[in-house]
Length: 134
Length: 134
DNA sequence: AGGGAAGTGTTATAACATAACGTTTTATTA
DNA sequence: TAATAAAACGTTATGTTATAACACTTCCCT
Image 1 (cartoon, rainbow over the protein chains, first blue to last red):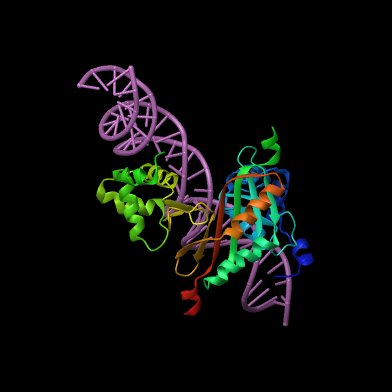
Image 2: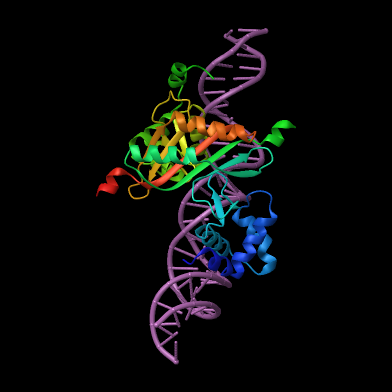
């Protein structure tokens, strides 16, 4: 794995296609939906999508939302702490947050039980402020 | 919905079957795995399993692990705060924790952005103390 | 130029989940 | 206790999400 700059320059054709599709979307997108959108650009099989998504996750450019089976752009490539996703049940929008306290809380809980954490998933379902207001 | 006592007495045949299968398991179990185990007791279709699992979740006896597509018994029917699941990559075991600080942190993050939370998912992947020791 | 690693394409299949419909059981209350 | 509403159940078919296996290509480094 190279440094950030090199990484960004090194994006492949499929990676760029998937990224572009994710940028256009205002919500997380499923793998088969991405496939449908990218058929016109030559992608034909689910695996091409899944592989590309795995690569983009590895590059920390994309997150997978486990409770939605869908993917979304990372808000900011530079964070190290655990992202918190707030997922609106009504409009489907997702916001990504970071919270130092939460991250350290999580670390404490792990440590207390001797568990060595690797990857943390925090997803909150509910209603966003806009939907709540309307 | 009745009180806890009544609820427990009211478990149906399918609910009892699924619960028993989950109790025997030392790890979260997938829906089709449950189906396989319960075929000998007359369950034949996935939907019978999925429906029963939904009922047990509604009764707060069972949790779904979103990142595993699997289900596990709730450690304790009496909690109200958000459960934290620590999932071992090596042995597959899962531990359920509760942490007041974490729960209130989560609530704060939601509130700050005007998001009204409904359901929270916290799943940590890593290595449990036993696997880490060996 | 040679060799290894990463990326690609394709077919087939596995794993996970729900729609739609009708029947049976259970609980409620008139 | 008969009528009826609600919950649970069973079954077939289908939809959705994800991976296995294998062969080929491209890129990069020495």
